[in-house]
Amino acid sequence: MISDIKKNAEQKMNKTLETLKVDFGKIRTGRAHTGILDHVTVDYYGSPTLINQVANVTLIDARTIGVQTWEKNMIAAVEKAIRDADLGLNPATNGDLIRVPMPMLTEERRRDLIKVVRSESENAKVAIRNVRRDANEHLKKLFKNKEIGEDDERRGQDEVQKLTDHFVVEIDKLLQIKEIDLMAV
Image (cartoon, rainbow, N blue to C red; front, side, top):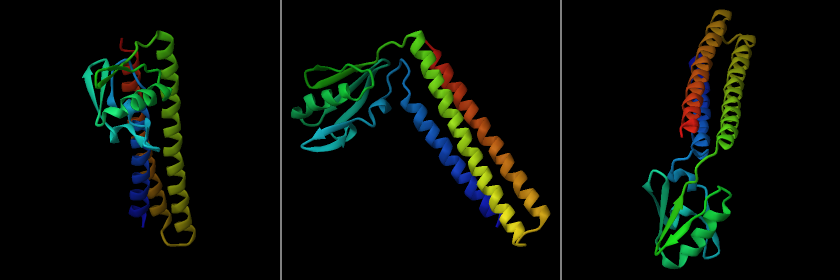
């Protein structure tokens, strides 16, 4: 029973960590990254469709994303969708290729992004602690119902705490890497 609680808590903490990685991926640096356009939707014959389902998104160079639509008549719609996505990007069509240059980040914008990143990591830590609290409550309930002994409850809480500490350290590592990435010129 205790191992099930620990395994369940570890799975939830892993999901929190993965969500944080995805969120960090959406916060852009000065470098081009195809993931920036992942959530952009295009009006594809009346239905909203993700950009990667109507076009091929690639990196042209370190600061430029290339978008090659599969249908020529979709070029204008894709370009409009990128411009309207509120990402601060200004695509330019070059024949049948849409070039999306990444603008340079100002020092002030970098500092704002670092605040956002720190907030996201703090939210992830809160989620990890909530998983710990739920696991500890489950252990207390098992002890109260006399399904496990006091030593087992204490040992289970210690294991959950070690797990929590491990994931908090992982979040801090991710935060540090992202901050360095954001401040790199």
